[in-house]
Amino acid sequence: MKGKVLKINLSIFIILVKLLYTSLNAKEYSVAIFDFDVRQRNQLTVAKYIEEKLLNTKHKFKKLEHFSGANTEINSLRVLKKLDNENYDLIITITSDSMVPATHTLKNTPWLFTNINNPKFFGIRDINKPGNKKSGVTYYVPVIKQIEFFNQVLNNKLQKVGLIFDYYAKSRRAELVEFREVCLTLNIKYDIKLIKGVEDFPKVTKELLADNVDAIIVTSSGKLYNNIDKILNLTNDKKVPIFSVNKKGVPNGALSALASDYYKMVDENLIPMVLDVLQNGKNPGNMPIQYSKNPLIYINQTQANKLGLDISTGMLKSASKIY
Image 1: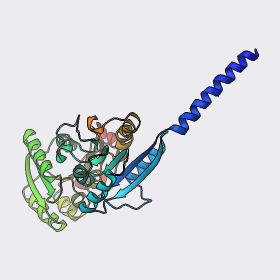
Image 2: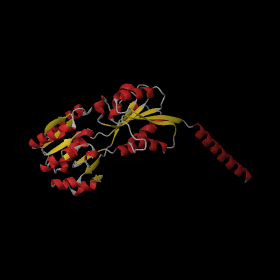
Image 3: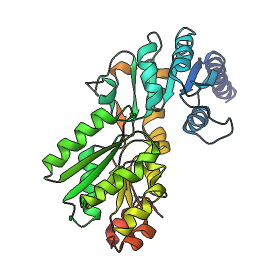
Image 4: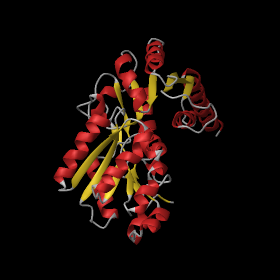
């Protein structure tokens, strides 16, 4: 009996020693999180959310640091070049504005991006094998899904759409082409307008309304979806709905949006990719770019009431958020 007890105790001791050895010798990772914009340290941002999620994993981090490009490409290039030479295990970039300088700068360090628009905008031809030690997550929802959804909201009565683009938006050229091609495919007429400044917004809206569009779509630019209030009185007078490709446009007056959720993307897509790179040593360049397969529906019921539009019960039940 004593021999059995000794054997059991010895086995437990060996297991404890192994666990202690593993704990003491577990690799501590170095990760840099880079955002183009300047954020408040305590502000709940995607970068902060990624940090919290990583700290809640079983892994140890020697360095888990935040960096900013201070809202300029020159600073971004300088900071990223420095980070690329400091032996980080991984660099994570936030937003499309960070993606551009990172593409030109990061050569040595594996990196993952998140919160970017269509990967094709950045010269990535193969989303299954992007190469050059990079991969990540896109919030992009294909234009055909967007317009089909907007048409569904309007009970399939969308015959002519007005498209407003920000002239200075990096995504504008590729996005404009895709919207035009999709409208042709769906046999929907379109009128395209560009704005350079917010002061142009009411002018081009009046032109679209004079052209008798059934709806106006504001595309990928904060200059547009953050300033819908500048044109809402014009569109409401004509009972013409505004749609946004970004969910932020909906509380500002857009009728609806079909969009990815940045934080959900972190949970479902980015964090698993980060852990695959760190603990399994995978090269991001060989990892498929991830995206939200089930984008969320956002509806402004208050705006629907003002326009005299009936949103179907089924769609309302499917909505992630109703304003």
